[in-house]
Length: 86
Image 1 (cartoon, one colour):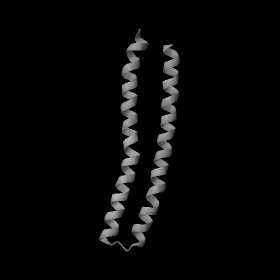
Image 2 (cartoon, helix red, strand yellow):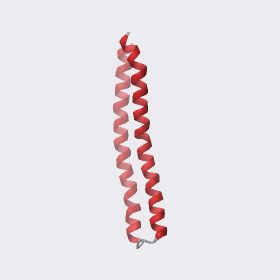
Image 3 (tube, one colour):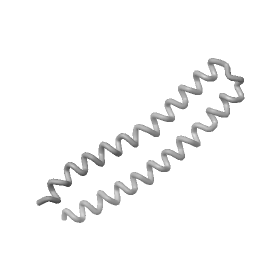
């Protein structure tokens, strides 16, 4: 039973890594129009402020899942280590 659970969690983690890679690509795709609009606005302070706020939101949507995945992996390792040792 423990081996099946470990295999399932391993596959789940690999799927999570693939999802994180797609999330990184999505962040880059979302950031390009913001940077393009900032360039074409002529660099006004309002455009720069709105662009930075948009980029910060995109960055949070990309970075937060990475931290959550690391926490989940540590939690899974802590819970599985005692079960595998028995």
